[in-house]
Length: 133
Figure 1 (cartoon, rainbow, N blue to C red):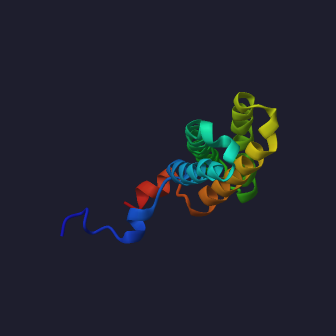
Figure 2: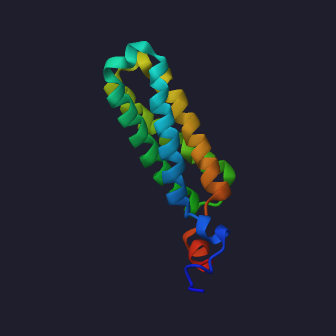
């Protein structure tokens, strides 16, 4: 049996906190963007909505993962996720217009809270991810 085959499933599933943030943030960002299909007035700009939501989720996820890697507190991880997502949402709001302020900010902050929780709870630090391999 080769070394690659001897890894258990748990070892194969361990992701560093920034990589887990990237995966969770990207998935939730995509879902956030796709939820725009429920608002008929967004039909002409759905490409932009999906793109910016996905990018916001990816960037926010990685940034939250890095904060979670440095600080090992669930509360700080969740608050960091909310703060980072709120800042990125504000950038999107500046482009989209103030009429959509709460429609962009609240889902973005929820995404940040979920990513902050997931990275603190399930993510591995870089040292522990290397040690399991």
